[in-house]
Image (cartoon, rainbow, N blue to C red; front, side, top):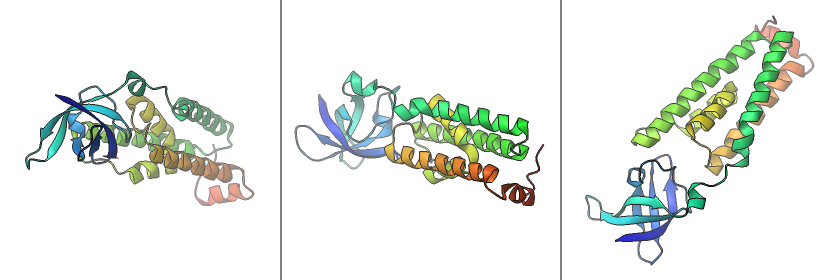
Length: 206
């Protein structure tokens, strides 16, 4: 017999949460491994159907979980997910152009390239951990990598791996790191006395 309920608590980092049954009664424990293969990551508020089982201690547990409603599963892409690749592409073109014109140090371009590769690897590792119930990459690590220049690579990873594109709190902090990073680079390249500061740090032009 299948039951229906709403996911009222979910810890995406640990991969578990609780369902509140529509028909009343106590909450039912749910683990990420209990969702049918091929589905997206769950979110709080999702309407689900499930088989009712028990864990090793006899507590109720949801098994063979499906999402309810195609509209929820196949929802329209987020506006920031659509715009993010364009923002990253424009920034990359501007940075490369500034480097070729001699307005930006080559070291800065290498910094972004290296940090972006690292960001992609961190997202890939976290995505794999989420699917295999392994140790997750802390979100603070992902944000720090984005802040120091890896955010273009993070954008690519989010789109290619379909990872970290729905969690509102993560997206808000991620875009804050992007703004802070771009502001810092803009100040470094354009502020009065910036050329002296760049030279002091060894960022020679050309």
